[in-house]
Image (cartoon, rainbow, N blue to C red; front, side):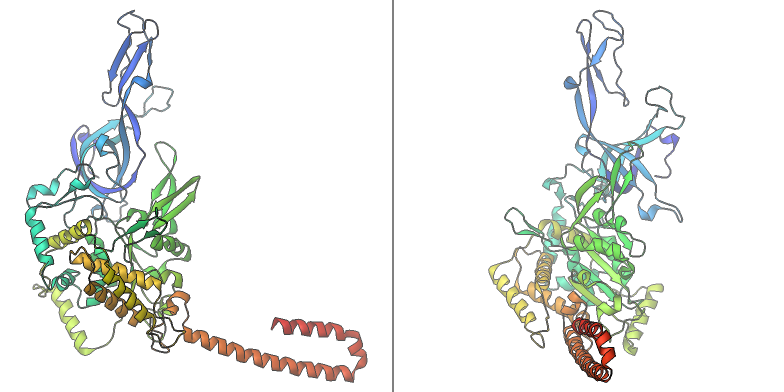
Length: 595
């Protein structure tokens, strides 16, 4: 994109980038219909090089400049303006990303969406710009754009979360022209499809897929399993017509732990796997940067809405690092996006609701750099409880001192820097992993059976009743929804059309494994999910109530003592009591009532 110059004008070029904005469909005149105002002679003119030449002389009556344009009898075609930005990996050090203007026609209109990584082929064009629209004087600097001829899949090593998927085994498939975004666009070679189905039938398919997730990171098996199920995702359900609403299928995960525990590495690996998704940092993100911001189009001078990170990650995964360093105004935006999966905008006369159907993977550090096991998760990362409750899984990654574990980890890290990398247990290539994930997300939609629904209900009731007391809550309906999403993701991982009992058992195990660390009250050692929802545990509530009652009793006793002392003083000095007794008694009663 940076190498485009005057020598490339009217030449066929190929570019790769990220779509950041698409305009509305604009009708462009292809064939103009003219009629002579003197004799009624009809003429047609065709668009050539973005211009239509009006007939100057009528061939019937030989009158000059007598033609008028008839719009209703002219033919038009669809046109759309697209803004393409450089990919982050191609930007030189210290530079800002550059953009280029695209013009799409006919079947390419509405083909790409903001956030898509595309590779296009087109013709580099130049268009003159007038100094004044009413005069023919032109500027010396011309405007450039690209007439798009076709779009291509840019990278085979990433998951396609949208409606298009192409995969071939030969080298020619790396640049395969896309057709209309219909179900027919999903194509797999027979050999690849057979190998995927055969791999799904292996008894240890779950373990092999887990080993293929971030193989350079040592251990953390439960975290890798949670990330794997997030990549597969649950089934989104829309029952708006029947009045039951919409239920999200995306899984949200939060990683909390000490520094140097590979949290950012997990985020980077998941981001590189997903085709649609944005990687951002909490400190460098603002509310409008995550949602949408209003700007003025430099060409049309109109107020337009630019998409933010969450909107660009629609139907993908948005990775947010340094989640604890976000300001409060930015966190408020995430409440609607994580549960309703929409973003409401009312700015500069633009009122709309944008889709943010994205799974969120966030990483946060403790406030004191080191995680304090004597404090709860709320006290360690200082996040609002209403936001933490929207995460399906919260993993704690602690840096514990253990000589044997430290020695194994040191061997693993040193081997990564050596000439001979460590022998990885991952037997799957990244290309096959991406193909398997994409095939499962596109082709497999497991359903809940009656037996599985009974198992889910029983597991949820058992989780609710596992508290130490009646006031100690260990599960809420959001945990039940998390169990359903994780069970569907595990069934999709097996390429099963129905959710089985083993899927529910694995989902319950993952939720309980996360709850045993993140949801434990450090004072009692018991699981107390109320701490996540309200920011304070049940035991702390009881202690506060007991302490409040004791303070109130002490205050009442002290007030009674003051009353007795005041009466004794009033009896000893009748004049003072008659002059100011009423005022003092009123003040005393007000203080008593306020207490």
